[in-house]
Length: 210
Image (tube, rainbow, N blue to C red; front, side, top):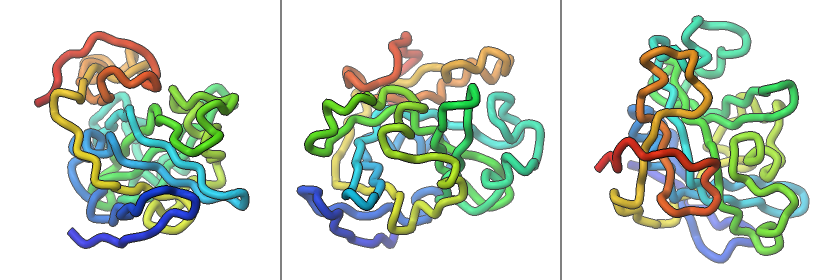
């Protein structure tokens, strides 16, 4: 898989920016493999970085928990586009949520970034602890202007720093807040790093998904 090596200003290590091919795969695989990767958001004041510790997969038009279940709309158009782009929406009129579009163009699927571990010096004690999807966007200074942003670009992207996550360190549960989705609400498509203090909320693990 081709990749681009970049140096993140202000960071202590080299990292490989994830290529589009990483996202052009089954969504559940992408959701699991994003754990331990690093979200990088460049600002005028310098980079903001968070290690991804929790994700959720939303898979196709048949997934009743997905925004795409009702078909193509102005709101969901990004989900139907090519992989590797940001889908940012607002909940409760105030909280932004960051998703990354996955799989082939025309098939609406995405991974929600539910929580990150702040790693930038001085931001560990920031007022916003990014242990929930809205808090992730607040921490990264991501809003609706990032809807449609290219995650293979230079402002917002994901890095692979070579961290290997052992399978038994990954837990899965049903997704949070989708009880309305019938049997789809029981899909074990929420993934998180066991024992990480920045996971959004505890929930009994359905399996380690080994």
